[in-house]
Amino acid sequence: MIRILIFVLIVLALGAGFSWLADRPGELSLVWMGQRIETSLMVGATLLVALIAAILLVVWLVRVIWFSPHSIARYFRVRKRDRGYQALSTGLIAAGAGDAILARKMTARTRGLLSADQEPLIHLLEAQTALIEGKHDDARRKFERMAEDPETRELGLRGLYLEAKRLGANEAARQYAEQAADKAPHLAWATLATLDERSQAGRWDEAVHLLDQSRTSHVIDRKEADRKKAVLLTARARERLDADPKAARDDALAALKLDPTLVPAGLIAAKALFREDNLRKAASVLEKLWKHAPHPEIAKAYVRARSGDSAVDRLKRARKLEAWKPNNAVSLMVVAESALEARELGLARSMAEAAARIAPTESVFLLLADIEEADTGDEGRIRHWMNQALKSPRDAAWIADGVVSQEWLPVSPVSGRLDAFEWKMPVSTIDGPLEEGGVSRGEAAIRSLPPVATPVAVPRRAEQDAEVATQPTKPTETVERTIAIAVPVPTESVIVHEHAEPARPNVAADTDGTPGKELVTKDETPLAVRTPVLPSSSPLSPSPAQPSSSGGRSATKPAEAPVEPFFGRPPDDPGVRTDKVAEKTTFKLF
Image (cartoon, rainbow, N blue to C red):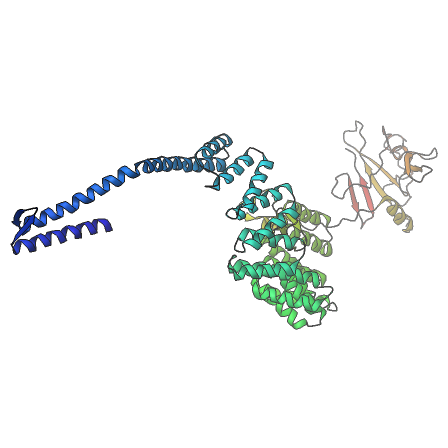
């Protein structure tokens, strides 16, 4: 664009000059070698301009002819370089895609078109090709050669670091990362890798110092740097809690200033303050954390702040937490547990059921089972809650890289990554949907709770025998039994009256004291063939003057087999009916 503008300006200047000469005509006379040449001024100016243009053209032609070999060589060199860069680009793309054949082909072509000293990326292409081909030793040698070159030092160190991590050589990886961080502090991967390595080794002071340097050079985002520093300070406070509670308190409070939502920092600060008997400040720290996000560990530390408090005092503290976060499953669970300890079972049940409706987890139903055991002791209802707990999702826990930990850890035990643990629910198989027919699982579990079973007292046979033996016998008392015998008696039934209880079979016991088989002694007669003895005052006994309707035979008809009463039947069995008022027992055989 600038060249075109300059060309236009030159043309305009020439036009303006010729126009100015045309307005001022004149003659030009030249005497050269005895000859006189005369012409107009306009023609002379035109010839002068043409002569200058011709000279420039001749100079250009001479220059082109003189430098033509070099120009031709440069043309071919540039063309070859372009082809080499095209092959290098194709090879890097193939290596990134995992195409080892094409990457190796492009590497050989690039080697023929470009020089490794001219283009360092050839080493990278060869190293990547060796990696996808599985030749890790060749790739490591290429990275070492790149690490010796100042231009590719950082690239080679990163490749060596990744190879050491792959092989599990953590010490070598740490050295490569520290070397890269020293040579180039602005590299984020080197800083983070060194930070993780120092955190794994528990060198919290060095890790904090390195993080401060990275914050100064703006390698890590400020928010992320504050979070990591808070985690490092919390880890150092956790390590110092037993030996130096004051230093642990300072580190934990500093971590809370950087990240007010860090629950482990608040818990450590509260524990350190509790050891200093500073209950008010410790409670203030826990209250701030609770208002931000309810957590079971915060509630436990707050409710049990004083070891000498009674269960009622702990319940008051739990109700205070529930007032700050109403309609929250964690708050309701805290109140339910405290109410169970205080033996306020009605409040405990209502709070636990409300928590189950909001978040039907395993711990909620286990707590309901404990409440049921303390309240009713009904085994059926307890088993119902236990069954619901087995089918419910697990409670939230500290999880990092698939590892579930009962307590918070600053570093993942799997990957060694700093600040890897998160409070969330473990991934598990959930049997059945969370909602059944538009009703939540907790609501469905509460609705399907069986009623409290009414205990039925069934007296044992020995107890009945003892009760009958202790009762006084009156002359007029009779024991009436009606036995329907399976014989062809169409219209009448046989009634047997006697004062004593029917003969019962003796129970023989083995030598070890266990009951044996039922045996009938020789002196006993089965009930169905025993002759009844009736008192004379009984209305059912026949008078001496009246003959028997059976021709002098006994009123008892022989039966095929004796029928023994079964005292173990439930009260609703139609075969046994007990009337405690009349103290009569009626047996019917159908």
